[in-house]
Amino acid sequence: MREIVTFDAYGTLVDFQLGPTTLKVLSDRLDLDNLDVDEFLDDFRVMRFQAVLEAYRPYHEILHSSLQMAMRLHGLEYRTSDGDALVEAVPTFGPFPEVPDALRALKTKYEIAIITNSDDNLIARNVENIGVEFDYVVTAEQAGAYKPDRQTFEHAFKTMGVEPSQVIHTAQGWEYDHIPTRDLGLKRRVWINRFGRPGSADYQPYDELTDLSGLPKLLGC
Image (tube, rainbow, N blue to C red; front, side):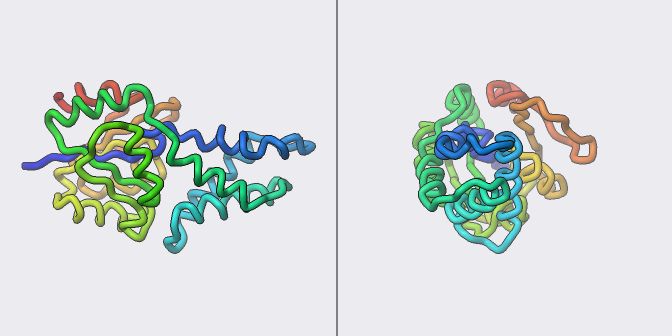
């Protein structure tokens, strides 16, 4: 039976430097009295998540709108060029150091695929930056929905021609990936916990690794 290892992209394979990039773009406005930068970035993160729960729209629009809302919440002046700068930066992000070698090892035994909350044109450059050929790259744009919506995963399984029982899903995103996949009947789930966050017994079973370097051994490669 075919088995395929699927991956979330941003934060799992790709070092998603959106926070530092946001601070760089807004560097001329961050000296506002009483601005809590960490709270602002967290609100921006939450607003991006809220946006993907709404009716589908392209990811570049989500970046613009959620940044604008977070900035208004904290009294920062928003410019359209701010959102443009973030959208332009996303395709430049490269992989975490261990990712290419781990993927090459996995390809000796498995097909590999990406399931990502991204636009086709944004993720294409990120995949090029990884430098490893994937069997499938499935985007929210193709699915017409974002994770954690199950429609995204169901579209991916249909595209790949597999049943959930043939899929090993690997991701760092808890709310985007591990919560919605608990009851999908996947063969296995692997949490890439790069930031030492607490897990949850309610969403077991899953394996936990600090990065991708141990994944080939875990999966018998």
